[in-house]
Amino acid sequence: MAKSAFTPPLRSLYPCPQCRTKSIRPMHKPSLPRLFTTHSFRQAIAAPAIDFSSRDKLPPPNLQNARVVPASPSYFSGRPDFTDNLLNLQALLRKYQTLPTIAPGQAPRVAWRTVSQYRLLVGEPVRASKYHQVIEVLKRLNQIHPAIMPSDLHEAMQMYKRDIDPYAVVRQPSVIDAQGRACGIGRRKSSSAKVFLVQGEGEVLVNGKSINHVFGRVHDRESALWPLKATNRIDKYNVWALVSGGGTTGQAEALTLGTAKALMVHEPDLKPALRRAGCVTRDPRRVERKKPGKLKARKMPAWVKR
Image 1 (tube, rainbow, N blue to C red):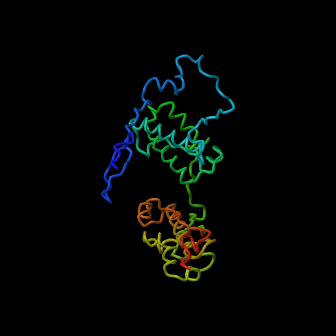
Image 2 (image 1 turned 45 degrees about the vertical axis):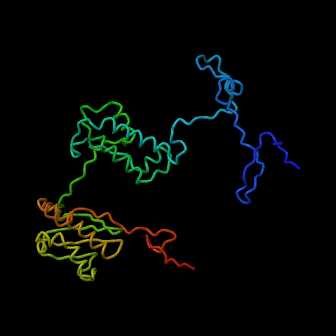
């Protein structure tokens, strides 16, 4: 029989790559043109355009789905008022940073609010380190020359000032009493010392006892009398002191500050020498507190894998 010459429509004979025989496969149909880009098709499926030129044509607002927009961008942060205050001061600093300034020692004396007073003002648990950033910006703004201080800057800084006159607080100078004694008070850690200095032969009594009996270490005895030894006055004054609190090291260094203050009452010209010897400045360092979950202030327990 003769082979039929009939071929299905839209089909053609293609050689098979495996058996090398011809098989019938459908031909590739041409893709239809995309009608989504035509103007007529877009008008058929898209919503009509809204005319914003007239407010009367806008649909009425749906009050049930309305959302209250916060007045401050920092509303969702932990301390929105503090963040707004800090950003406002930083913006003022960028605005007026080119104005002439004066030296920090010549700037007007200002009593700024403490961190506890600021917490009560804003009602937020602000950390002391964060409030320190505000104080640093305020000190920089306070150095702007008072003659050209802008009014908006002056009003913004009034919020952080205490209602006191810093010039009215004057430290009472120490004087020598009728018995020739000069008194000085020193503190270190949790220790405090009250020192009475009078001209004499170099006798030292601490809480009614000799200094060798109170301080067993040589270093503590030298620390207590270091102001007199640094100025070569060890045999010209008698020392009578009352100490309390803390340990021997804290009491000895408290005696250092108290003795230096009493010595400056007798001889004010010795202040530069005492400052070079490190006897005038109060040492604010204290032992750091222990934290929960740690062995000491920062020491962590030994890590065990299993």
